[in-house]
Image (cartoon, rainbow, N blue to C red; front, side):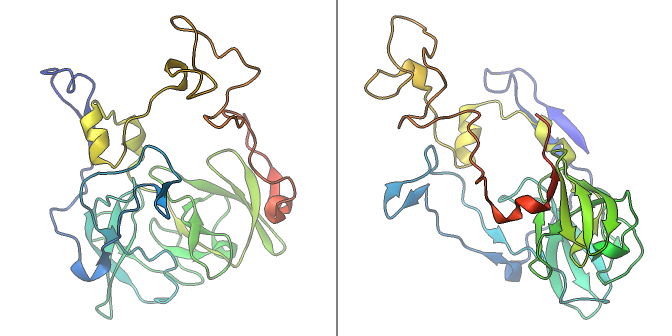
Length: 276
């Protein structure tokens, strides 16, 4: 994997860079495993519910198999590694021994020709998937289930990975990339290895037009607005916020306000909170 930094020919190219994974294959997406998703542009019933969304390049959704539990014991071969416009991680196209093809999240060590398998207990090799109770302690894992049989819900973004700390009775201790330690049922499945495309975070967009292609519209800072438009607005020249804490355009607390419910049912599964 390499990072391409463009020559400073124009103002937009000055800070632009792209990530070029070495394992990518020059192949069109599998047509049977793609869907068309209608654009919402951040709207619900015609009203803006998420600001600064809209436009963007046309793209098709890749159907990802997050469960991988319907092919237990059937070996598969990686026939291509592709980019997915709906996620920052790379996806791998698997061809199972019975001839069926499916997309899965690619791990850092996957390449064309790699062989993977999913079962209750399999060798702890990169890309294989099995139950947490059979994974060696200290292994880096990803695409982790929270509820058995529901499919992977945690550790799915580019470069992320968690470590299995211990197995205690019916629960497994997992240290997440945020440093949080939480309990998960040992009957849940997880994939061995770190999620691919870990250099995605150092990519620099470079210009506003490229951000528009991603489906993002311009964002205006509240401090440059008028007082009627935003709590941070007003004043002569550049002024500080002048409030006890930052606020949203509707006067709600922002930047640091805890939004997690104090009595959330899953709090009892968190052993140690993430460090600030």
